[in-house]
Each structure stands twice: as C-alpha cells, then as structure tokens.
Image (cartoon, rainbow, N blue to C red; front, side, top):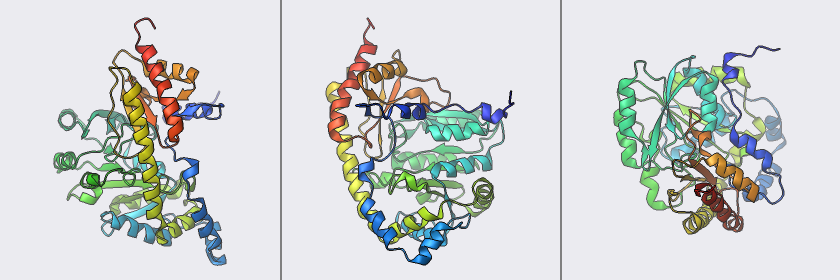
Length: 401
C-alpha cells in the first residue's frame, strides 16, 4: 500500500467539486457553482481577436513563454490595473494559471508546517485547501456585515504566542459571504495591521462586478490604498471578466516577494498558457474588456435582484441574508439548530443544488449557512428554484421533521 505524504493526507475533496457531478442531472437547477454563465461569454469578440492574429502572433501563442508572463500581457494588464488605482510601478506582476495558483504559490512562499495563518470565517474553499496542503494552522475570525470582525482580530493577534505568517482576506464581494468591506473597516484594518510585519494576501476576483456606483469608495482595494509598511500581496483573475477557461490570473506583489514566487512558479508549471495570454492581451488592448464587464455586471445585477426578491418572498421566518451589492453570491444564515447538509439533501430530492456552509469553515464544522450562486442561473430558473430551496429549509426547520 502506498504511503502518502502528511501534506497529501491533509487534503479533503471539495463539496463544490462533489456537487458538480449533479450538474448533468436533467432538470436540476444549479445554485452551486461560482462560474459565469456559458451564454454570457464574449465569443464573437474572442473569434474576432483570434482571426485577427498575425502568423507571428499565433506562433508566439503556441510556444512556451517566460515564467513571469508574456511581456505584452504584463504591459496591457499594468494599464488595466493602473486605471483601477493599483500601485503597479512600485510592485511586480506575475501571471499565474488562475488566481488560485497565485494563492497557492504565496502559501508555499510563506508557510512551513505548523505555521499560523489567519483567515476570515467563512473563507474561500480553494484557499483553505491550499493552506491546508502546506499544513498551516488556520485561525479564523468571523465576518460582520462590514468586513472582518476587527475586535476579534485584534484579540487574536494579541493572544497568539507565534506571529502569523500572513492574513488572507477577500474584502470586495467575498466568496461565499458576498460581503463588501466598508472603507471605514478597511482603514481600521490597515491601522490595526500597521507595524506588525504580517503580510496581507488580498484576493480580489469580484470587485469589477459591482452593482451600484455609490459603492465606489468602498470598492477601493487595500492594495490601491497602498499603506506604508504593510506588504500586500494582491491576487485576481480573468475568470470573471473574460472566462475561466483561459486559466489566467495574476499577483501584484512587492519585488522581494515576487522573486520567491517566480522561482516557485518555475518549478510548478514553467509558464502559464501563452495561447490564452495572447488572447487576454488583445482583449485588454482593444478596450472591449470594459464594455464586456458593463454587460455582464448588468446581467448579474438583474439575477441578484431576482434572487433577492424570491428569497424575501419565500424564505421562512428565522432565515436571514444580506442583499448583495456585487459579485456572485448570497449567504443565507439558518437557525443554529438547522444543518444545511440536511437541507441540501432535501433540496436535491426536489431538484435544486447549492453549497452547504461547513464547506467554507476552515474547521469544517459550522453548518447553519447556505451559499446560493446566482451568476450561472437565468432569472426564470431562479424564480423556479428559490421556492424549492425555501421549501427544503422550511421542512428542516419543522419540529416534526
């Protein structure tokens, strides 16, 4: 029998991944996956870009590229990020194979087995898996409606005997909670972290998908605030603003950290796909990225409003949620005594699927929450599926269940 490494034995299958096996079941309404709708992809624009490539550009696309990324894409991405206020000149960009690879590389850079790292609770399952694969000791701090609970974070920082290697945060339209940190919370967080010499990994896959212009002040990233004395490692992705099939993300990090990350990426996959880097570069340079983001942002807002209205109409008393202001998700809180896995089983019987709460708890325990995704489901299916979810919840809340 093979003897596996300790780090491999730490890994567990993702409930999201397991649920994807249900995706092909006829008639199933999916509120589970955090992926864009296939019908929203910019196919005509991508066709035009590819058909317009010169033979030389196609040759570059078919070849290995530099570990750090194609210079052309780094240039166009630098302009894209600069327009969002990010301090590109003071940092370096590393193109990665999706933003999860960026998170994974940063985890490998910092974590030795047993090291403490801090996260929000709930937390993105991909990040949890990456941190556990390096045998981190994950300490999590609950989210509030405005962001991470700063009182509990300060208590945690003060009581730990060992300094955390980093804190991982998703301030803008959190996955799964949908939370948008207020600008006040961001400023207080920066003040709290100043002088502690603890890097921040800021995961920012969703900030382009905001629904309300009045949120622009709150949308400013920690990296764009550019606080002195705090190493902020910013990660993001083309997955939500072009398509996840490109398998392209990036990190924007201080040069000293970048040097270590580039060495690790070289050992992992040598380089990310040149083919999709050429496409992404042209997509950015053409300017079509901005009109496309506007288009999908409008559609996701419509779907979020439909789901919100249906939840408000059908949910039983005792179930709460925050109305989303962007991103992909709504996070339902059930009464403490209701297990969302039981609700999920009932919902699957009835024809819908979502993700239960313990998936996003680093300890894998707290389970009275549900993540509903509206990004991949048209309005008519949302209106059909939410009453089914509500019925499943109601049945599990019933004293006679």
